[in-house]
Length: 404
Image (cartoon, rainbow, N blue to C red; front, side, top):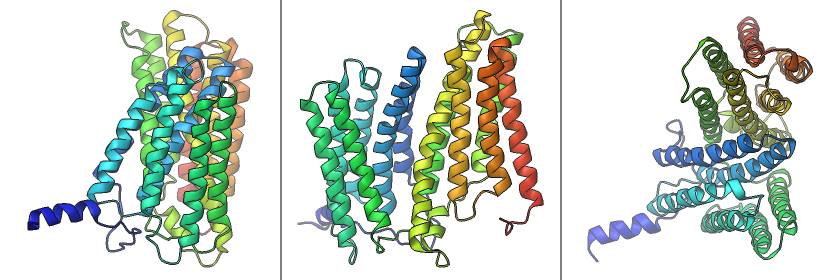
C-alpha cells in the first residue's frame, strides 16, 4: 500500500476523541456553519406551515414540529461538541445528514395532515445516522463507559419507538412520536443528573446556539422583506417595515448582549457549587432555547401578517395578534430563563422586568390590539423591546458584575 493510500485510509479510520484542546478558543468549523445553514430550509418550511394555517391548532402543531426538527439539530450538534470531528468519516457523515435534513424539510408541510409517514421515515433516517455516530464514540472515553452506554441505549430505544410509528396508523403514530421524544429526554436526565462522571469537553455549544438564533432571526428579518414583496411601497407599509426591523434588532440585542460563549465550560468547571446544581442549570440553559427559537419564528410570522394587513388596509386578525404577541412573549420568557441559568445569571431586576414585559405585551396586544391599526401594533411592540434593551444596557453599565 502506497503512503498516499495509507494516509487516506488513516483519514477515514482515524479514531475520534473528546475535544480537549485548550491552546486556542474553540469555534464552529466551516462544516458546522454549513450544517447549520441547511436548517434554514427546515425553519422556512415551519414558518410557511404556520403562516398558511394561522389558527390555534396550527400554533400547537407548529410548536410540536419545531421541537422535533430542532431536536435533530441538537443531537448532531451535541455529538460535534463532545468529539473532535475533524476526521474524514465524520465530515462525510455530516454531509449525508445535511441531505437528510433537506429531505425531512420537504415533508414538514404535510407532516400532521396526511403526510406523517414521509415525515416519520425521513426523521427515522436522521435518527439512524445519529445512532451510528453515537455508537462510533461509545468506546472512546476511558472512565465514562456507563455514560455512553446509557446515552446510546436511550437514544436507540427512542429511535426504535419512532421506527414503530411507521407501522401505526394516525393518531397512534403521533403518540409514539411523543413517547420516543420523552424517552430521549429521560435518557439525558439520567446521564447528566445521576452520573457524577461525564465526559468534559471544551465546549462551543453556546456558540452553536447563538448561530442558530441568528438563523431564526434571519427568517424573521426575511418576513419584513417578504411582506412587502411585489407591491409599491407607500408610507404605512414602509413605516410598519421599519418598526419590524427595529423589533428584530431589539431581539438580537437582548439575546447577544447577555451572550457568553464559555457558559458551559464555566458551568462544568465550577467547583464552588455542587455539580448537580450546575448541570441542572445547563440543561435549563440549553432546552430553554427552544422557547427562544419558536418565539422568534412566531414573531416573524406575526410581523408578516401585520405588514400584509397594512397593505390590505384591514385590522390585524385576532389569531395574527396572538401569534405576534405570543411569539414576542415566548422569546422574552425563554431568554429570561436561559440567561438566568448562566453561571453569571441575569440580574434579579432584569429577570423580573423581562417577565413583566412578556406578560404586558400579551395583555396589551390581545386586549386593545383590535382597536388600533396593525402599524401601531408593530410599533408598540418594537418600542417596548427597544426600551427594554436600552434599560438593560444602562442597568448593566451602572451595576457592578459582582452584584447579584
